[in-house]
Length: 117
Image 1: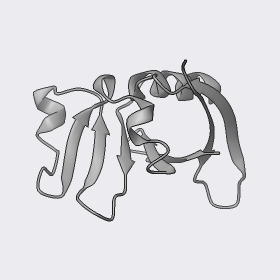
Image 2: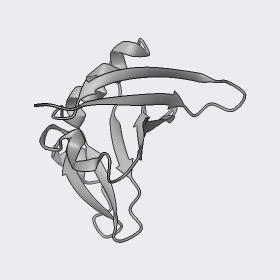
Image 3: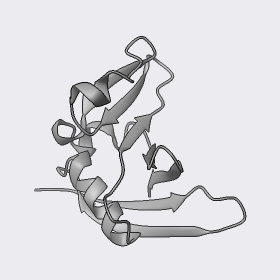
Image 4: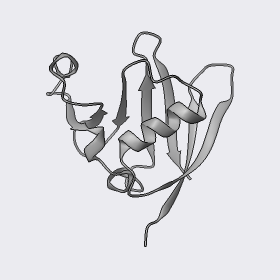
């Protein structure tokens, strides 16, 4: 049996309340979640992105697009544990960590807070 997670995805934009609520299987990867976010916010999947999980007990986790050398050269392996989004299931992060930050377009830095409800 697969659990469904209800996630609230809110764009962190001062003075605006913009969010979406989605139901997703717990077995979905963060790559799946990225694609869902692109769809529900009508983004066009034209920019880089990453997920960040803050963890008090050890280094924060960055869940990144892939291990492309160009992408990886900007990663701070001392400050973060780095994992590829296609290999991390939502159930590995939720419900242990109730919140994840998704950043889309590093130039404009569209930050979204994803909360397990």
